Length: 85
Image (tube, rainbow, N blue to C red; front, side, top):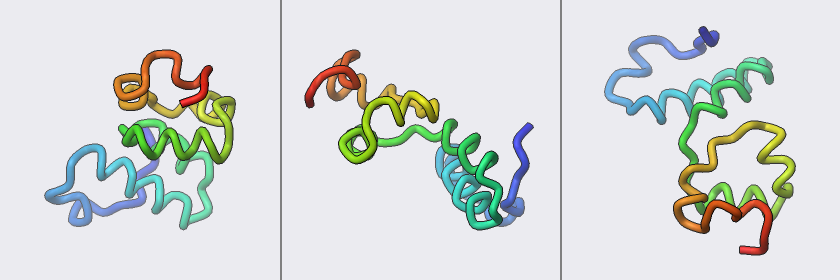
């Protein structure tokens, strides 16, 4: 189980995806880089955000951090990390 940085009140009304994203931000703000990345790995990031991350940091960075890429695979094809998009 991942360490939570949000109170139950802060989570009320949020989707699971939003909770994971906000937990990542809160962990980062608390200086817990490990938990921040663990929470971020659970987030369904939009395809355009993943593409921007690829362009800024390279495909190896996305792979190294274990980010979910389902949205980008759907938008750009299964091999989007290995070719120019």
